[in-house]
Length: 149
Image (cartoon, rainbow, N blue to C red; front, side):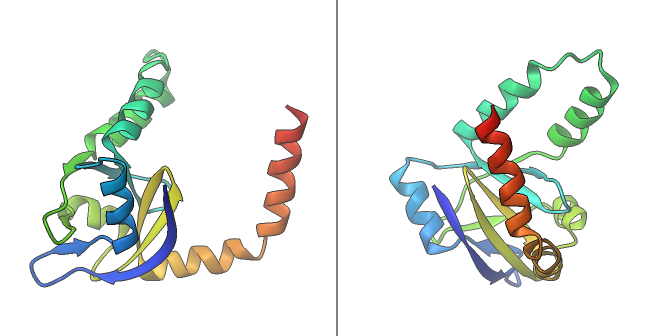
């Protein structure tokens, strides 16, 4: 549903405009609001309400008696906030989430199928430079694992 990589900036009022393709995908899929939370690799995850509920159900199914589950759930859900794009497709990301992802002004907005990732532009560039070198190896390992299942 969400695909591509876009470079945007946070405006002087602290708003981030979603790419037109993402706004169009949201409209076509009747998505009116999103949930943004701490992601992995120092980015933010942004889910539609439906996807958020799917992940929430999966995480609720993990036993809270496990220390790692409690820790992850605390960090993941305490960081969550609901955002609804305005008429121009702009959202406001809370400062604590921008601090977590080290987002100042320049943002890389990355579509990862069922979610959107928000990165500081430099963090995305670093991640991409480091990870793209092993893209083929990663693909081979993942696809071989999937075929063996």
